[in-house]
Image (tube, rainbow, N blue to C red):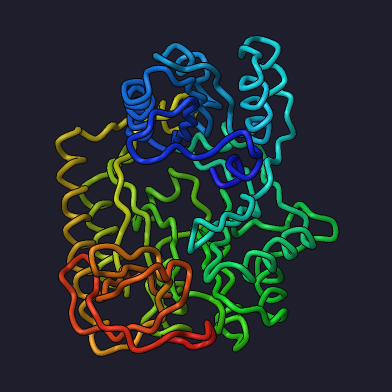
Length: 421
């Protein structure tokens, strides 16, 4: 959405709170059936709240089911994820009086597969830089390759230049990609995520760098062993583990087994003690037995994880898993999800409580009602007494307590952006 806002020009501005919009853009996801439902719900809600607006739908769900989305109320055009770069031009054409129709739809579909990273947005204290898109992995449950296409990377020098520009203006930059760990493999000469982060660290710019989700088999452990990269990297790592059962991992076509996950998490914790390590876990995959579920629980319970992202498997049309036998009963899937969520809640409360007494470096994201809020390097949400608009700055906050959802503290000073918590 930052990329879209940056490409629209002066004819457009964001609608204010409570103001009816002329155009609404809905980004969609199709990673699960629940994501599809949520996307359709968001479109219908936009049509109710902005009855005179033209709704443009984009994202992965728009790529795999454009006809279904086009039939929803208020939808003027559907632009798939691979044609996202055409959306600003399409909106501008419509704004100038052209009605969306077959010609415009064809123009959108013909857009380049690489849509580029988000443009700079000073409205965000923490800004996203997308350096990679697409995936070649072929996991049996995933529809993302069909929606996003083959893995492809932003050219190295361009990625580095954009990253440098963002770090000069933002306290934190989040490097993102559909398969971030595969960054650079398709480039000539071949590059890597580790090279990109090392080059960013070598530039000596202010601010900090956070990595989005990275496949366990592609995690750049070497970065944790380099002093200069460790200084700018946030101690927060998101691993799509999915299961702790070797049998289920094999059926999922994941390129690792439970032992490799355990070794990786332990190495991360050794390289960055007290890091916030997060795992995605899928429950109810076809053929998952009680023993498989218990194996996953045992593995995740044994590792120093801060919390879990838990989601039930759902059939994605066209994926091998959609035709697999052994569907797990819905009630059993819910029960297993609750067990995982309970483990996650316990871990998160414990992780927050462990921050008490520490001084954390926090990006100030908003100040209202006499309180400031922000995010620490370890992805801990922090609140402290504050006033004035200091959004986008780095603050040092001493943590005094936590309420199970966020940490509470007092500000001790400004940060140069160089300190570690």
